[in-house]
Image (cartoon, rainbow, N blue to C red; front, side, top):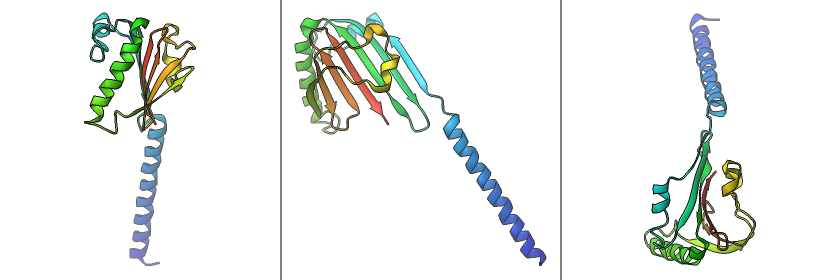
Amino acid sequence: MKRPIKIAIWSVATVSVIGLALWGVLIWSLSSGSASTVEQRELSADELSQSMKHLNPNIRVIAGFTASSYGSWHGDGGSVDIYLVDPSGTDELIAGLKSFHQAKRKEWPEHYHYDWSESSRPDLGSLDELIPERFQPDSGVYEIGRDRNRTHTISIERQKGYVCFASSRS
């Protein structure tokens, strides 16, 4: 074979091997090097005093918890904010929430359009394992609001004062 043809073959082969090696390293780093981020904590007294005042100033929040789990290279996971409120204010809370969403829907119609239904328990998916027993939902009748994209869910149990805002990304 002539020398220029040999040089061209070796050059193409070398570039191909380097390209495949880089591709392999990229695939490996995406699959194994992306640790998930998990955060969970109870809300402070200051956070509790400010939470939900925009929905109704009479709502008394007793305790609160927040958890989030985001991981993998494409940002999947979700977050949950749980509040234990005085049950006597849950009807006012639901009315305030629906009124707030109706007002916000004028600005952002795709984000504040919720369909409401009843369920025996909120679906928290993979976040369920992050929630301590005190903030786990008991069985009951929950007023469930889901946005049209099915990424945000609001769950309210009127008798026990359980309020949960959950979001999921996949």
